[in-house]
Image 1 (cartoon, helix red, strand yellow):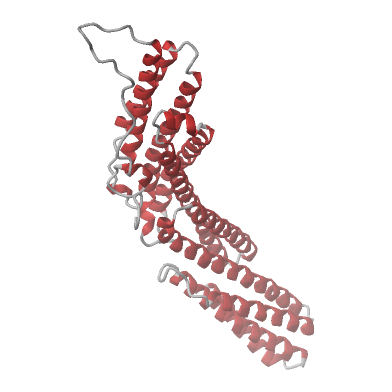
Image 2 (image 1 turned 60 degrees about the vertical axis):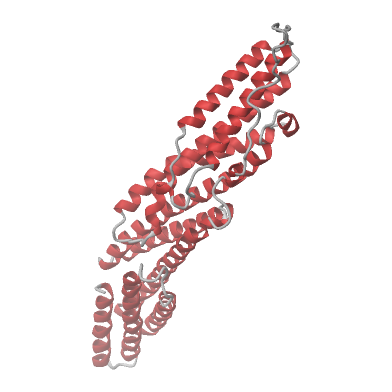
Length: 391
């Protein structure tokens, strides 16, 4: 990261809390009877010190979360310290006569926060590692590996969001004044939790958004095949489903980007470009299929010798095809990823614009009694429709 490492709030913790409470030096070879309250305080300070050290372990991670494969984090050590801390708190509660109930309860809340932070961090690393493959080119014609990675990322990232939320709740419920008196690193833990929540929600949004994007690409594959087979109603339904998924993906990416820290901006940029491009692709096809409906209506009207009405239908089809062509004219981003699909769409809309013009001329000729020209233009138009389907 540019200015700070992940969980950087912990990295500055140079001195953890005292690991021992008040100690009684030996004097004159005898040991005075110790105040029982000192034993409770010893256990409290031991617990908080262990928890501070567990938190510090997160700040010593050498790499940032943008390169999860390089992160080395052994969760067993902080977990062992948390367990030791809970044992000390149990001992403090057993020794307490009722004077330290508040302090013990707050220290337990602090332990809950640190444990949730460790859980969230471990899950976040697992999920982020699965997503790392999405930083390269997104190939819509080879989604197998991407789908597997997304599926593997969903559970750990959902866990990271839940655990980081638990940590945030624990920190919010803590009495900072009481914990500060026990030398707990409350403010650094609070800052770290805020950053952790941002990373968890950001990467979870990235994962879910890509899953929605892949669902849309699957719909496009079906829609393209239906178009090739002249099953235009089925093709329309599939393209509308695709557009819905791409729109959902864009919304998810936007929400994730807003929650995420700026260090993830470079990962959300391509994601938003991909969703925008695919929204244009599927939306353009939906408009194209509006034109196909008009074309079909005009052909039926021509067979019924309703030539004037057919002219209007073919003109409406031509307008829809031109609108679709304008949508497809948008340059897809990231550059090079969806070029072939947009080229096919351009090819289809171009042929169909010409087809609508030819069929409109055919209807006009037939309406004027020039049946030879009408037949020639009708055949020309039908050939162009076939050419569009075969792009």
